[in-house]
Length: 160
Image (cartoon, rainbow, N blue to C red; front, side):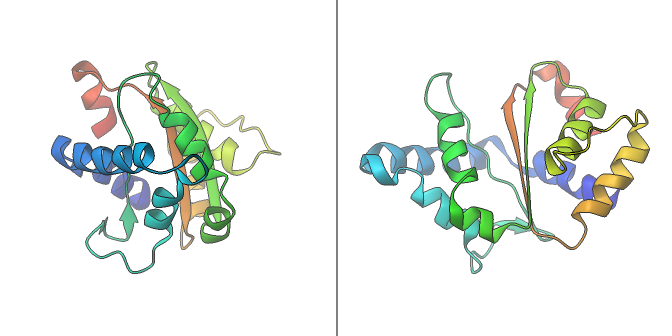
């Protein structure tokens, strides 16, 4: 549970300015580079062992955001499926969130993405969070939350 709380805390710690700076850096790299290497900058960044100051308590959070149709999901898919990224992270999960945010649904989605052969029938959030913590503890992991919509009214849900 502590690890999940740390992750939630990290999401909250990203200021709008920090997210925008990262987005500008990523976006500039994407449009500047040639067709074959658009995602290489992001791969280098997330697989770097010596990046200083990018993490809080051992977790790194990267936000790629912008208007629809810019290629955010395409970029993220290229990075997620890159061989270096697969070798760097012991566990990977991809979860589609959309604007219908439900923490139970999100937690179940992460668990199912981590273990594709085993659908989770568990309905209690606390039980799923303990299972998620057990799976992630001591491992290097990459979790992609795709199509996240955060409106002011939903901010409280993300913080709890």
